[in-house]
View 1 (cartoon, rainbow, N blue to C red):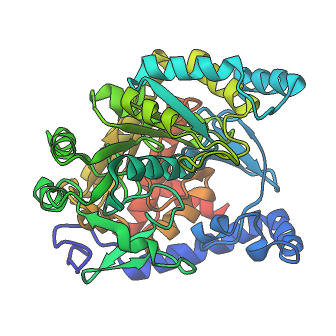
View 2 (view 1 turned 180 degrees about the horizontal axis):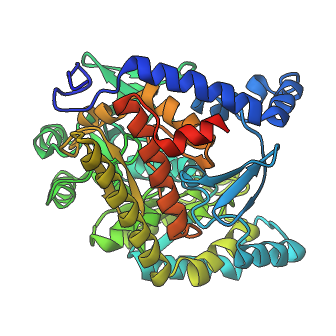
Length: 473
């Protein structure tokens, strides 16, 4: 049970395959029985939507039958059969405030009556930029509908300002569905991460391990990289924290080599008040925000230094008269999105709200650590503000390769459906659970209790008395 493999170090916990398979098969059968309305909707959807979903991305997360949602309240949503699920992945960080927040509902209704979009700025856009500048540091802002769009704009600005083409990213990254970043390094050659990508734009991308400043230095001294793009902590391969001084060293090296730096906080903005940029006092040329701040409304943006803002103004694209930097999109900065962003910053994403979810995140991590101790496992909890999760090694990872020891896909598939059948939605294999602004201590304790049941059966091969009673009923 403790034997290592190429992807699992010898000290890591490796779940017994037979128990994983047994649990997964049993739980999928239970799931099918309790989601019959979703099954019927899936059959209907197959004739009009590939894989029965509006975006095929939704279908790739699960090995169990597709679930159809009906409505959400607070920290939970309900499926078409009326089953309730506490959302522990908060819709991949796009619903960190929970469902049915009155302030957001009021802002949406009020602005929609006034006008959803004009392709013109509103006063709310000024207010949002002012609030973000005061909160995070960058003095100038532009707005998009997704972090993918924000990072696309940032790359174009950086290439224009530096006269360089190459992009530096780090293993385990996710910066949106962009051809430049959907790249893997394999045997010294860049290859597209997914099918259907051209591969040509991957030639300009350099991929390095996180937390390796020597590797960064060797690349940047060639002075060919326009932009280094990184998260402050890597969040798409479980959770990888920066070494002390790593991010400061990255900023120093980019300055010394004329390379621009972007801190992508699309995932991490909810980890602390003002994001990790404020919490850790980080400096950069750009800062990316996304996920609609967790409001569920499509919205993103990017901050920049005054020098960058001045450059953008001098190289404006004026239709039919002058070609400038290729930036923008028709629905960028809509009146509706800006109204929601403003109320989020002014009334929802408060200091006290962030303090509360950080306390809940620590409560979850403490509970996971207790499970590991009780079962004698060489495991521990990830923890960063509201984010937690189960690390299958005694030492926390420093890079993507080490992090993948905790991404046991078969085990996570079985755990996902096990928890779903018990009212907890924990769906994203690359990202651990997170306390939302709507969660309660009881939600967190319930999640830990169900995880304890799963791990007990997985490790000892027998159900707890509580779990056995539930299954028999």
